Length: 220
Image (cartoon, rainbow, N blue to C red):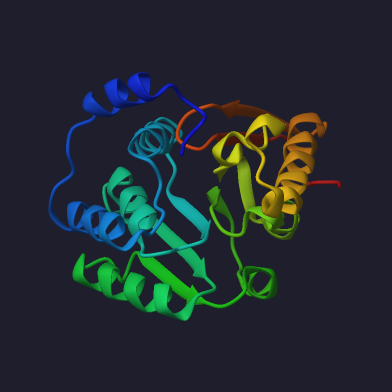
């Protein structure tokens, strides 16, 4: 259940979005049939606008899943930019690699199998955008591990930050999710109050945080 946006409003917004075609459409069908979470259509469209208007040419993604968001991002960059994406689950990594190969984007999208916390120190270079869409309870660790890889005037996008409404209100809280919710609240507080970060939390999809880092050096 999604408690973030009124159902009728959400349906109306999604009706305004043109249907995807080709392999992206196939991935949407696969995700629905196999209950694989992918970015919501309205979130994908928002990120497409951000990528185009900010002239993003390189993206670091934490949480590949089946490669859906990586293909969306590459399309937004007219298949010219570079993407490095990390996935912890071997089965998802295998599926994503096949999907990216089928899309003829292996030269543009690099998929890496492993734990992001271990792998991030080994990734070199700067990225115009960092996309966090992995374990929700570890966003702050991911952020601190990769923020120095963000280009000047770069953007960090964190998905699912309202977590089905549970982060915003205890009314929706499920007991077994308490630890994740507490960590996400701490993360949102951190990125919203840090003097070098400017953050907007947008209540679409399952909640998206868009963060801008000022200054070349970052201090915790």
